[in-house]
Image (cartoon, helix red, strand yellow):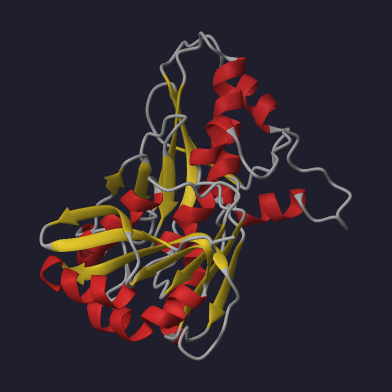
Length: 320
């Protein structure tokens, strides 16, 4: 099965004929940016698809390159409206679109981000995956561009048969619980990261340090692909929590089956700092008692969905 992961982000610009700004005005503004190509669609007025490409961002941030190809400063961590964009190329493209709209506010222009699919088409497998939303987190495949607002966090995940896309209840439950615990500035460990979706969510929710591990090398490869252009800094490792000690964290996230949680309970707790939390998902509600007995710590938050359960447990501080 051929799953495309290279959908290019383009800026689609459209305005009616006789608009207040014409092609020359737009070209003069775009001259300040590293435009890779402009494709003009037939029809009245302006119908342009503008591509900037990956090299645009790389050129801007190459310290050995004397050309300052991207004049608008963007800092990290992102704040305000920039936070919703999951990908460097999307961020660049959106920044240019906003500048155009601000420069010509009364010109009747419409700008939006699109996925340039030509000359390929989306497979039947890919078409079966739509975006999902959990709280303020939207998980979207690369060929869809949700309309964000200033509070939305978009995670761009390429669907695959073996790793999480946010469609399974266990992943949705974990995403919901991540938004209920305080991740800001915290150290987070994602055990069995799969596609990297929970690690990305933790980073975008403000975690100070995120480490993501998986013992499956294919999962690590899938996560690495999803993280390749991500506006997050995640320490991704091919490791087994049962054999490799990773240190201690304020929050450990484990979206694992009940049997794995039962077998790894002591190891998972060994990675949680005193006063920290363990977020677990991936088990059936019918298996809840087994997981509770294995973890043997007080639960703070519990959520259920479609016969699946997830919970946050707390490790107490030592008695002084």
